[in-house]
Length: 64
Image 1 (tube, rainbow, N blue to C red):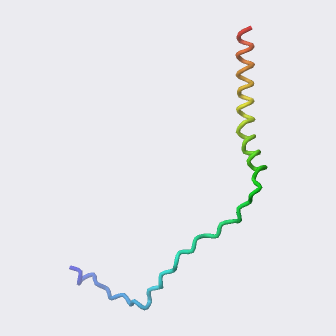
Image 2 (image 1 turned 180 degrees about the vertical axis):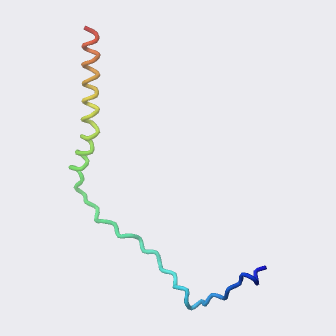
């Protein structure tokens, strides 16, 4: 049955050569990331502080 669907042979000279893997270039590591760290920390802590403050006021006003 394969003889029925056989189209032809592959010409090996037309196959492109394998390229070596080259890893992508990574940007230079910036040592001064303190400002970004502080901003990320504040984005996390400020909402939690507001929520804690609101819960504290709620408990305080409910008990009196």
